[in-house]
Image (cartoon, rainbow, N blue to C red; front, side):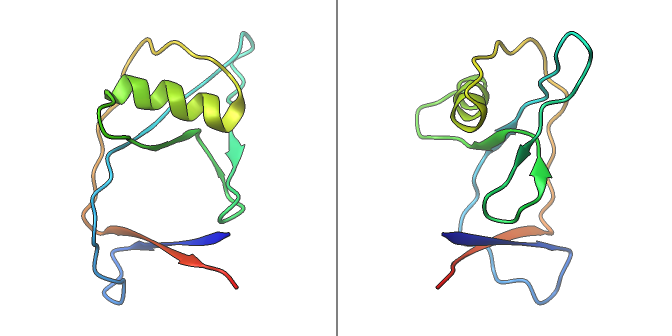
Length: 96
């Protein structure tokens, strides 16, 4: 399994090698409870989401990633925002 290490504004972070557009989704139920996943690579809780595949729209990415990670089919009905941070580097390494 891959291990994820997040670096934020860290001068010792490895140099980025790719840029991966990604989507995260905010899913709530009728009681305004928020759906979170527990990441297998870090154990942290997070919003469902992930990287865009070639040929997908951002909406397609959000729908696919939510289904893959939660089993829920969703409709996208809005956009919260577009966020970027050049100082955030994610490094994946294989655990042995």
